Length: 413
Image (cartoon, rainbow, N blue to C red; front, side, top):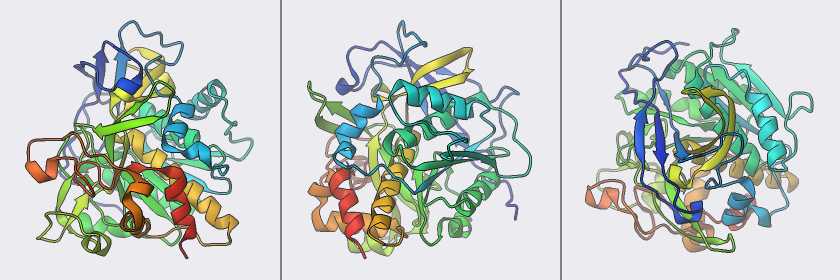
């Protein structure tokens, strides 16, 4: 089934250049924004989706090695408590949906895995599968290859024993990306990560059924432009992931987080508040509208992640520091894969409608299951733009205390 091309706004990918003053534990540096073209073939039509990432380029950076300012897998696994769990997602499949073809996706994942001591994830060993939304391989697009590298590499970093199925859509039109979500489900994904957004549109509820499947969780980036709700994160059937700035102490332990100013969030124009949010309840929602995000994760490009991309963008290839809520979504997907793996070991079904499990965990013990994020803003709109105690429209319920939160998911019937 094809969908009409919707009047969605498409922003330009940004290269963020700044002088790194310290390690990523110390968060935001001054940035200069340089606009990049969205396609090798000229601007894309406004009906098309955009990938959501930012590249943070340190002054004098050597692309032959990971930036010294970028977070690496061991740091993030320790900060959020994934290293307290022996389970790493075995037996689960993470679906990654991106647009266009990344010819070097598997090879770049191999470089990333070797660099950071992660197990190999290849077609040959059955860990990695690249497939297409249609029968024909898509054309390449350098901007989207960076997104693909980010998504598969950091999903693998958090759940290194989970399988990855990368579904490449023919274009970055919403209809093609939604079809790719369906393909990921057909290939056995127990969680699907979507690192792309559009502004909301009046008929979006008609597409929400694509995010309802038994034993499958759907995760989406909330957006990188500050206050405002985006689709598909707006769907009540999706876990919407916002962004923070993460700080570590001198020993590499979790220190604190503040809301990232780019984190998307607010109250939906078209989606209704799901029962789990109404019962929590979320604040200031007398009109009964869906609130986003549900949760958050480090996303500030100044506290971003090391990725390897050999296709290159703007004449550069190699190691980059990348941030955005699209970095957060695949890592939350990896968290769900670990929970499902542990549930399988206990002979339990995979999670379905996982937002219910999130809000239940928060209601039982928000400060034990989540890191509270109570400082920072993503705009100047009062309640809807301020991080606060409990749920807020910038960081949701907070960021995961993974070992505790995952165990709460495992304990569910």
